[in-house]
Image 1: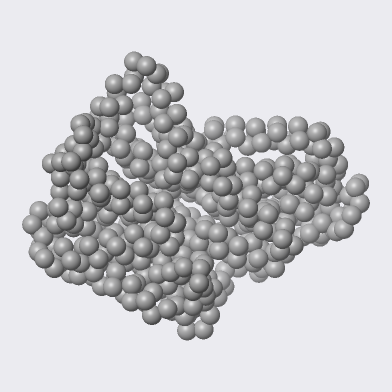
Image 2: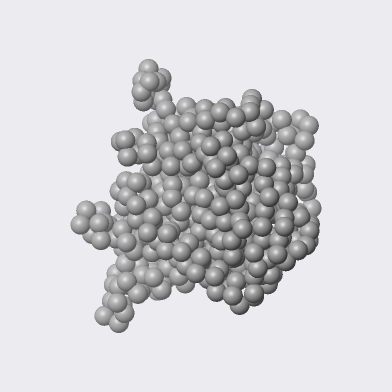
Amino acid sequence: MSEDGSGGGAAAPAVSEEQLQKAEAYVEAEEGVVNRLFGWAGRLVTSIAVAMSLFHLYAAIAGAWPFTDFPIITTQPLRYAHVAFVLMLSFLLFPLSARFPNRIRWWDIAAGLLGAAILVYAIEGGEEFTDRATMPTQLDVVLGVIFIILLLEATRRTTGWIVPFVALSFIAYAMAGPYLPPPWTHRGYDISQLVGHLFITLEGIFGIPVDVSSSLIILFTIYGAFLHHSGAGKFFIDFSMALMGHKANSAGRTVVLSSFLLGGPSGSGVATTVTIGAVAYPLMQRAGFEKNAAGGLLAAGGLGAIISPPVLGAAAFLIAEFLKISYLDVIWMAVIPTCLYYLSLLFMVELDAKRFGAHTVDFRQELTLAQMTRRYGFHFVSLVSIIIFMLWGYSPTLAVFWSTVLTYGLSFLTRETAITPKKLVRALSDGSTSVLTAATTCATAGIIVGVVTLTGLGLKFSSIVDRLRRRQPAADRDLYRADRLDRRLGGAGDRLLHYLRGRRGARHDQARRARLCRPHVHLLLLGAVGGIAADGAVAVRSRRDHRRRSL
């Protein structure tokens, strides 16, 4: 694909496999895999990741038609096994520090095996193990403390210090209760009581956040990996360029449209930004956009993936689980905000184009828009299949499972998009490694949730906040508090789960829960905006580094 722009210049880049591989490598370094492993180490990690994906795919379909005779994996073993896989991969893929890159050290293997062995001990204990929650044995306490330390270290490696620090602060609060001033005071809990509640019961580490991660989030990351390896991302970008080419401000409109199409199945703001930016950023520069405006548009367009159906961000699954509503309802609530979000981006693009005097960039492609749609248009079916399956009455788990199967089958309609055995292994591996950051965050959030339920902090916090209602309208207060919390936590929308649980999780009345749906979607939107405003503009840094690497 070459360029005959009115502004002249070099040829516009096509979406080549080399560019996509470089973008993928950057995404792995930014929000996923840090160690790039080869040889026996690479084969080991790939084997574990593939086994993890196959395990969760089996857990999703076991007991459902047509696999009704398959043994069902119950809730507790599923959560334990999920966290065991996550710990092993986190320690193998994320180094202890930047001084130990691209190699697996003995302490990484030891930490991963120890974490998995502790969870095997918990699974083998069965009901007898969970019955000891109120009076754990000395061995239970020792193993529980070690496991919590390993979990905090895995979370530090995957997300940084913020989430582990918050979790440690809550643990300190649980232990120092008698020494705190009212209304924060409580009876206080020792190590054995904390271990019994956080490690042994399903109200702590293995609570609702891990349940969502093990039953929904990982299935969506597997689905996204299958879409990626079937060439859906490349098609969406090429389709947007073909549709918006030969028109005024084609570069800016292409970014918005491709972000909308790619962000929905991706669910990752940084991945969407980097994948599109590898091709669109040079295009926008040639069209006359100022570099900071181009980077800002790419960041805003990519981070819209957090609120774009059908995947959204991990916070959407938590909203559905905490409020006990259908995930399809969350999708419907996100449709209008998503459309308004991207329409506003189009409006800003038009203003920027006039301000910078952007000119038309023309393209010559091997395939016309009609030919491209006829040949690769089946990717649109994969894009909307999740919603269609849920409208047919399938649960979100089964909907994403069969959407993944459908994506795999449709990929064989053309030779270049076919998911061959080699691509299949890579897709299964990428599906597991992509969930590590969200999974460790959910597990560590279980510590926070467990302390909140154990100490009664949620009820106390609600009563304190309720005193302020006379001074500030409820809706404004909720949005203001959520925005401040999101900025302090670094802008990641998924971390709003702490606020969701502490402020809303204790309310089970159906009428109140119905009234809370809209504020929770507002929180999700604030989380998405926080990804641009308060997260250090990760996606903008991505574009800056891509300029340096001349992608």
